[in-house]
Length: 545
Ligand code: C2O
Image (cartoon, rainbow, N blue to C red; front, side, top):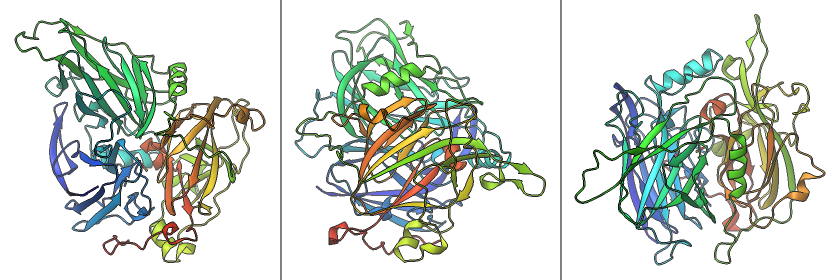
């Protein structure tokens, strides 16, 4: 294992897409941002210097941050933001993880332009548990807005309506040839026949789950959220914001007389406006002599926009490898069970008080009827220095504050209180958490992301969770292990994890608009007794609020 150094200079850069030029926040002037590549066991030192007017923080999405909670990155949760002119060195070691992850800004909506792949190779001389790929190709999905991102968020928060939808989806920053004024901005994957390619796919889009498919080629899923899975073949993958999926692509044995489109388009279960446009890239066989100009272009078909049965089947196919080399260490016993409702609602507005959602808006999103208010000091700092009383309360509810019936009349869970509450866990608590979708604004799948842990997805279903019968069907043998899971639209999901990492860990919907409306909370994991079970002191350069 070695130490790898990266420098991230946060700078403004003019970027043009769809014939619109705008000045965006970037890392080192690159869009998408630079690729970080390391091996399992390596230590990363990433020096981030802020040269832009905005406050900045960077999150290493999916990295467990064992004993390095100060490097996790969500603003006001584990650190104060890096202010203009300041530098902070993110310092962490990659323990027990290998696979595809990504990094992104974790403040305001800046991750719309600040994101890039984080690729962890296995330790030297340790092979993949699948065919050795001829080449590895990161494919990172994003969203492009012609207007300024900060304007989008203030519009979303101030009008009380939904935000403007994006103008395009992108593959590696490129919208592709199906959009106006974009054909030169098309991602092209040139391949040789008879080879295996590993596509490392990342959904860094702000607000949409995506279907992805390549014409006339099937994909073999081998990994999700940097954990190996039992391989399976599929024409289409579904990937939520915050999720990563590795697939093997076998190219045709000889040069085909066609070129192939790869496309992605959203999976949408809710009401409201969304961008239903399609990003396209090209899979092109690199023939040494033939011109590809006149070859026909084949196009794949994707499931319907709201194809929930595809979504359910796809997630049911995802199983941990659960081999002797890569066991699934599912907690078999549970110390604490929690039941969280997650959903959207509207808050009352009246003339004397205005609207009572977060930021004075009508819309609110909540977990157990608590819409999380972002503090002005970091939770982890205030906890470490014993000043938590003034920053958060340690009494996040174990169960919803208002009961609900998903399948009955409109569920009465729209009552939302605004607060900064965290759930406190003793070191090494084995946690079972059932999350129930209760949205009344049109049910919508919520990709819930937990920082600092991988969890096992032991069950899921539609309608109301039944605490008597549903646990009988839990999979405690080979459930998928991941960091972001879709709470099914109008349904529930059950997860388990072991709280073996002291610190403060954010959990939130990875749809940025829902996070802004308050669909977020934090877990505070206390120190254990042994020295290596305690949160280490903060680094000297940790930014102050
Ligand atoms: Cu990728 Cu808290 O986020």
